[in-house]
Image (cartoon, rainbow, N blue to C red):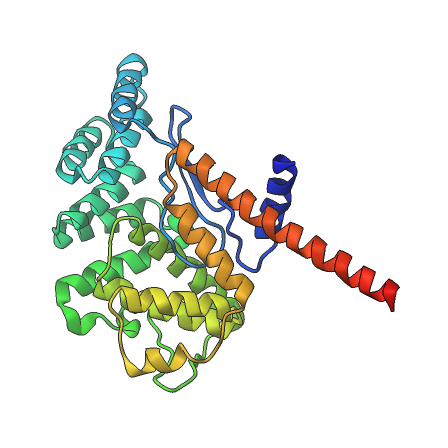
Amino acid sequence: MKKYLFSLLFGFLCSLPVSACLNGETKTLKDGTLFYEDFEGFVPRGHFFGGIEDHEKLLHSLEKQYQETKDIDYLSDKGYVLITLGKYQEAIDLYKKIEAIQPNRYSTASNMGTAYELIGNDAEALHWIEKSVAINSKSHEHSEWIHVNILKAKIKGKNAYTSKFLIGTDFGNGKLPVSSLSKKELYTLREQLYYQLNERISFVTPKDVVVAQLLFDLGNISYLYGDKDDAMEDYKLAKEYGFDTPVLKERMTLHSTSAIRRTEKKLISEAKFQTKPIRIFQFIETLISVFALIFSAVLILIFRKKIFLILR
């Protein structure tokens, strides 16, 4: 019975406007480990690093498999795991070793740039990110130009933390966002900005001026594209990251999210932090119990209504 109810619940959640399902982008390491899976949709929530119980064991395994095969992908994945663990300098040292063994790999340049930015060396980060773009400009949904602009803005200073500088356009200061971009251009920019923010939010916690500005921009794009629930979520995240202006406050009143969407977002928020298998199981058990109770209440109401109609 619980299995059946869970299937119904899973299907229900996946049918909502922006799915709570973990069916977004995934990253599988060279050894077959599913390292992260993202939430579907266009509200950046960061990568869902779940299910990895022992990172040190994973690091050891990747190193061992490199030693056995000499396949550089194992070392590259080890560097990425180090970054997610906050061991940025260790990751940089490893990627320097990889660069010496096999120069001009995209993943080396991209991950080296990320690691340098996370330790606060924006100039060196810019060098490596620009190199990664030169190697493969199509990567990351063609979005790395935004990463380049972010690093240039950080080097220039806070006066460059504007929509125009970061993404080449803005959406006005009136009550409603406005844009001269076509629907297709808005969608492309939305994809690229979402990708960059989802990656960045995985490593950068509130408050952050650049992330806040870009979340506000993503909210404006979502609103213009017609996804107003997503826009409100982006605006809330922008505020959480430190964007607090009269324009934001005004635009946050433009749309009221439905009760179903509010419930869905609460479920997503709860699920995101259930990273260990046992906690996931406990969460699902609780969720099934709640929905079983709701389902029973609905059946009782339907039954009572039918009885009432018969008695009439």
